[in-house]
Length: 453
Image 1 (cartoon, one colour):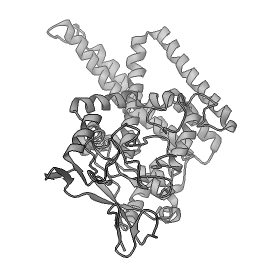
Image 2 (cartoon, rainbow, N blue to C red; image 1 turned 90 degrees about the vertical axis):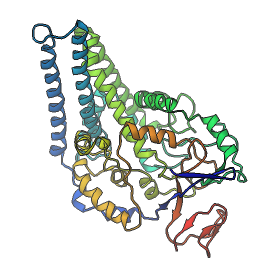
Image 3 (cartoon, one colour; image 1 turned 135 degrees about the vertical axis):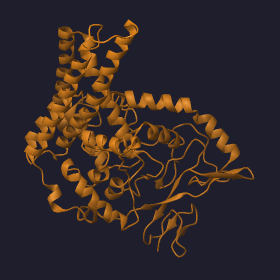
Image 4 (tube, rainbow, N blue to C red; image 1 turned 180 degrees about the horizontal axis):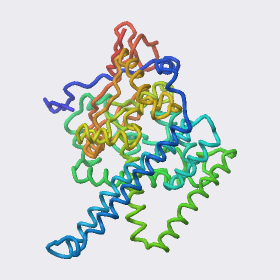
């Protein structure tokens, strides 16, 4: 974001006008070719087999290479080098197995959306087995994830990645004499106050991002971290009586907990049989990588200075579905990295907007469906392909997205100085309302919101 300073004021050189869409659900679904909605149990299952083969091949390769890391086969300067070489082999295995394991996670997630097959019982059975094997409470997470899809981008109804508000962070109240509500300008004095209150050091952002990637998902499941703030303290995905579940869902939560109990028991038994060190390098390290990829992918899908968030009066399902971004996972490593990221995780990062428009489209049809949807969106001036997904992008977004204002039906993230890279732009005529829209001039007299006529 480019800025300039003059006369004690720092301003954004040019905020990006982001179109606030007025599509209906029918408008969006009609853009998708009908055959893209077809699901095949056999084809979906084949991806599970393929992912399992890849992980097994990586494991066998690591075992094979590790056997050669000894004085009997190679000569290294000191014993420490053998340890380091073995560590490198198993670290590479953990990274690769974790990336492909994320693909298995995606298939289990599709089971929850009924995108795996036409058979509900089969979907839930496969999903429960796969997600339980990855430490995920299948039904519990499926329930809250469905709420996320229904209310994506809603400030008080969405389930996760809720932007913190100015007041929630204890920041000084908005002073419109000193700063613009849309974040186009801010006085240097207020910018300093905000920066001191929020902190903006590269080291702090790096450590915060690392903590988020490593612990974010289990913290969300156990403590509702980064979840909806209106829920009571101690809300979690393991309590059948939690407010996030209805009484009729009680047994589904119990089944999810049984899956987690079996998962923990299997880890304990495997550690007793083979030793914790073996379980750590063969399973737990890839498991941590899966959690890392899940947070990295979903955080970048739903967090960016370009994405609007809505309050009750302005949120619709289509707007929420389009308040997401497609990103090329590992695309910052070049075309080969992007290809590996997309193939290993079944395009979950690259076709996410389409997934929010229709979550029953299976991943192997999502590429064609996404291409068709993008054409429809482009005709309305909407482009939802973000920068490639990777650690560098997480760092950038982590620093640029600090808070949103307590006022406004449509809000965008502001950075630590109170500046926003984007502003809303409404398509078509809008009715006069309490927002102060001047219908004749097409400009919101209070906030400067652009309105196309």
